[in-house]
Length: 275
Image 1 (cartoon, one colour):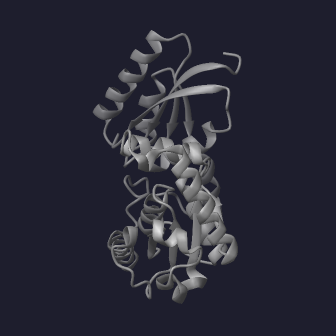
Image 2 (cartoon, one colour):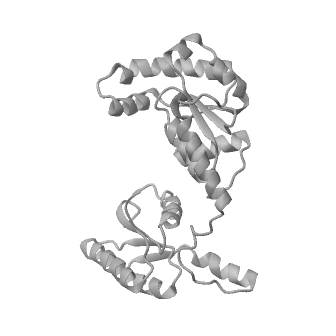
Image 3 (tube, rainbow, N blue to C red):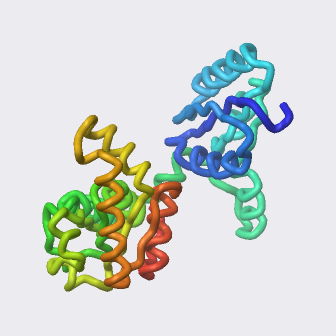
């Protein structure tokens, strides 16, 4: 293949596969000319499961001219050998780091499986659950007491406030609330009074009008709520409030949830580690 076309990629792990998929997608995103058909095979933690995975890969290989790509985070060398027998291009994500750390630490890796997501600090885990509950309780203005909030996202309906709040809560334990700007808020052309006490924690989200209309149309087909003219009007008024009140804001149209959350946390100086 000369940089164009389709390739099959497998994210294979002896645990959930989240690490393999996250790192793998970051790598694959660098190759814009290629379309990847991705598959995740998780909990490959025994020889029979490794052989089943290898057979699945071989079957795909037999049906295509190009060999599959495997992004692998399995730690057991014997299981890795079984996967390699599939004939795929196997990229061992952990290998370059493990060897270097063994030399630095003066000890061999344990080889224990299911460790990537098994090092649980229960205080952090509880904080993450509490943050998630907080985000749900303070979603779309359900609870407007923001005294405990780390951040309050502000914007018109369907710009990405809720998924961003949940992402920051689930992965970082951030207490994130969101406030939807209503027609009444937009007509007053100023920051709603209920938000004025937490101004330093406010962050605005916006989006391109056409994309907003598409999102709303999928949610409420044929409604006035989804009309492009209404979306344009709401976004213009929201932007006026952001500029008048000097609120930081971000256009979410071409930005992933992960990037949105990271930019918000960086701007507000929220320093929390990913779980």
